[in-house]
Amino acid sequence: MSVLKSKRKPSQFEVFHHLNKVRKEVTDLLLRDFGYSKRKAAQRLEKKFSGRSYEELTDVEKEIYDHFRKQQEAFDTWFIEDERKAVVDCLRSIGEHVYTANSIYPTYYEELVERRVHQDLAIGQCYRLVQELQYAIETLPVDVNSFLKFGEDIQREIDLIKGWRKSDNKFKGAISATAANFANVNNNGNANNNNASNSNGVRPDFDTPIK
Image (cartoon, rainbow, N blue to C red; front, side, top):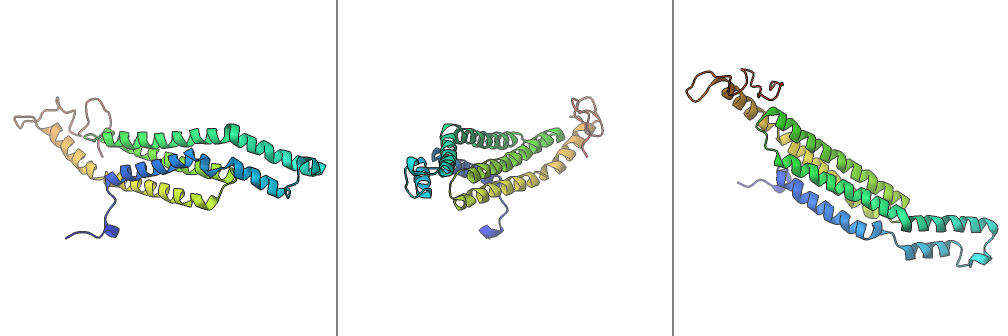
């Protein structure tokens, strides 16, 4: 009997599938300069001063106009490029930690810890991605509402990684059982601590017993 999709537990593979989806969508956003349009910005500035030429503006209005012009130039010359690099770095870091964690199949407790560390780092980079996008969106003259979907998608990725991390608890029992058996018997069925480590199931090159 099949399980309703709404009641299924998140699959580990959803972590990677959804991450690729988020990465493609955010990359598309970066290719569009976060939705910033130099032409529209110039039109808004012109409309702000009712289409009057610079010479027709008062001294106070000229100061305001110059401020907005410098701001637009900053967007074009360095701000968008810097934020693009920061966001790309976040995306790459998330992918790096997710795929590194997946490459570790834990047979010892220390390997399980290392796997979890990468999962935690991936979650941290997801939160960093949210902050970088939010900062760019709030700074640039763009429609903030159009970015709500990105926040929801990134939160979905965070939830998927957390679900994957929680499912790794299944390794603990297997690791404990394997370590205990390996420590207490050899091929002849006799006790042999030389191959394993000791009766606590401690691997020779580690000092921490499995708890």
